[in-house]
Amino acid sequence: NANPRLAQIFPSLVRHLHDFAREVNLTVGEWSAAVDFLNDCGKMSSDRRNETQLLCDILGLESLVDEITSKQLATSTTQTPSAILGPFYRSDAPFLPNGTSIVQGLSPSVSWYEKALEDSAFLSGKVLSTDGKPIENAVVDVWHTAPNGLYEQQDSDQPEMNFRGRFRTDQQGRYALYALRPVPYPIPDDGPAGRLLGLLDRHPNRPGHIHFIVSAEGHRALTTQLYDSRDRWVDDDAVFAVKDELVVRFEPREGDPGARWELGYDFILGRC
Ligand code: DHB
Ligand code: FE
Image (cartoon, rainbow, N blue to C red; front, side):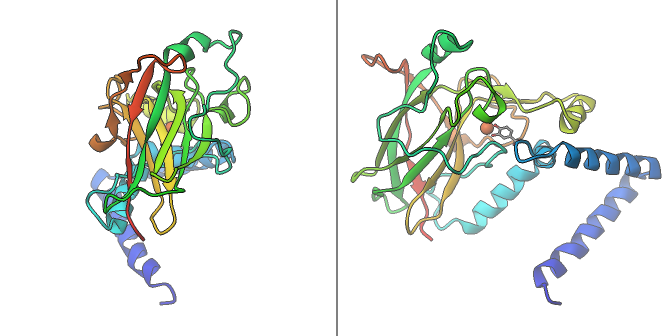
């Protein structure tokens, strides 16, 4: 076969699909409804919203393949665990100096002004190699939602690239930035994936999280998320992405008018 991986995957896929259909006595009507459903997901998808990915996520499939892939690529048990990318990453966030803020457009006229002040947070730490050595010039790419639970591209009231930034570590491998303590929010539930959640009596909520892609020369890029330990959905994520090592505790910050909370977190990258 010209494609050995396909020759491995496809017979197994067909076997499991057939076994599944036999096990539940799938009818023509049910199969046809599933085809319509997948087509609806495709129709709803655009470069702003990937409904088919969302479907995979509520089935736990993106989290599962992330787990499988990261286990395969891991070169050390001490490296920081990965988590799913999610559908809202933008690859071209601005590079910002260490110690600056990813919060833009904060003014008393925005509906989430008070909440943003309450949730202001200072994030800092190091990027390390699995041997414990700090990595200089690593890139920490970070993004999260506004306090209304919307990413900048979902929300016409937010400035472009709000709550997104890329930071470079210094000689000691340190990064530092101002952001917000993240809020929980529902994944978009106004399309077919949301309809399915409703049919299954499942909620659409994700625990508050901050996304990161941490990359450095000679190391495997790490895509991950950090979760607030005090979030009510931290044990019940609609897309099954939470891992214990990624659950963090924000502490009150003293003497900094820029932040009420602080979080120290070191990212450990595996070599490639
Ligand atoms: C999903 C992931 C996210 O990080 C997010 O913010 C919204 C949705 C998802 O897996 O579908
Ligand atoms: Fe997210």
